[in-house]
Image (cartoon, rainbow, N blue to C red):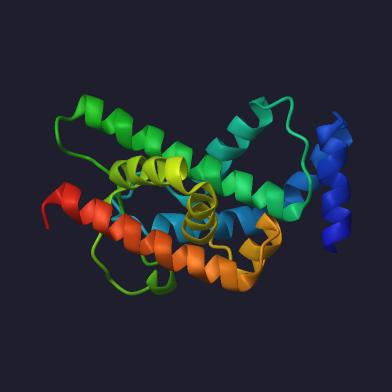
Length: 189
């Protein structure tokens, strides 16, 4: 579907047009499922959540938002990536409260190597570190959310944030270094 058509449906949904949502859901489902698959692939899997489940939970939470004014496709997918992150954080926190020290979801910080085994960190620690980064470098935090959680390319991230691809790369590299340092010092590595 052309981006303009998708943007039109998103904006119609923002205005409360129910039929737009009915048309939109099947059009974005495949992309949302792929996004969820990428996000879940970065975790140490324990078989508890499937991509479709993550999509559905995120979708239900998005439906609760009544005042979102969708700007375009990139805005929708960036927001959905953030929502998926929140769903996983909520699940990890719930597991931590029921299971002392165990059951934390783990996430790899290298989205370019999602298919290769890599060291993992606790997703709750990543979320806390991202929140700390957002306090000092909000745009860099958004770049990490979009690239890591959303699976956005450099070009897609640049478009969504209205910045140059070079700025995305600079923010990405700086944020990764900052997060690695923060997470390494937290774990005593």
